[in-house]
Length: 415
Image (cartoon, rainbow, N blue to C red; front, top):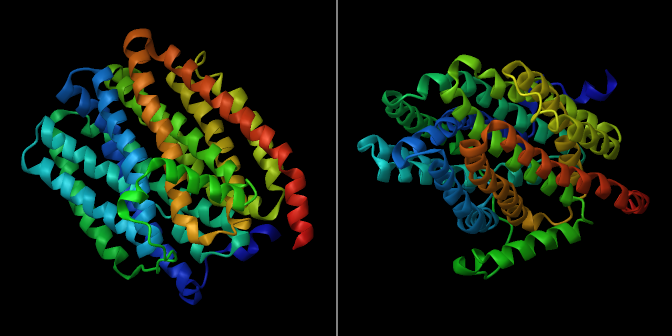
């Protein structure tokens, strides 16, 4: 097909230097995704074991997500803008290495916190968005962000079928061993990935973690880029809310009702991304991305309200397939708009940190609310909460498509 022809992966050795750096970074990201997804899936169970109950586990996870928003995300933006887009992933991997090694040395509730700390720092700092924005052709953002999502999903997909073997206490040490080994391998892969920093200001380190200023920088980026980054923020908040809920609820549900569920209830979302992320990205680059955004969100709003009422294991798999499709389409559309209309590269790191904080807001709230609802009101009520929040996000995104139609026409005319 004509729209896919220029994106084939042949003749890799003749790719530009920037693309080669991205291939290396994506390889490391796939490995980090595999190990990270495995460990994050068992974190609620580990937290419940060390701190007594699902609600307490949700609070522990929410605490570290809160640290992501207020501390880790601003710091990642600070170092990426000043030291280069390659520094975030490397700092994150070193942090995970240290946390895993501490837990491995003496597993208890205190080193478990160190384990969580390292994982959440790595999760925040290993952010490839600035590297992509700085290295790729601005009209191919959908493809490259789709490629990124695809390699992450390959790792996640393998992880969801491995995590049932790691939910028991005697396997947690093995998970920490795998994390240490994987961190060392990823550091070796990333040794040649470099990208100089672009921001040369006198902002101090303490000033950089002022959350008010982070929000101001993020919204400044939104305004300078004609509000198109709002689509990315909507996508991030959806992903934090939805995946924060299901990655917390489904492992607990499997642990409690192992005979009624399996890893495919989580893995189906990754299968869809593996199969369609790049395709959706290319379509967003070549066709009308606004229509993709609108139709995908309308479809999503219908699907999420099936989850509370049609939630057998088979139903979760079927609905999850179509939710994954809708997510890939509107995510690709939002990334295409972000890349195409990005006129503020000096704040790529700051906006990536801001968008990560928005995503982590969903990841922080979902475990608290869903942990309480699941423990006292069961699975159905927790999914009603998730569907309600996603409805608000979806209506916002659909309305934004109509509001920015004239803005895009003006920009295209000026080009």
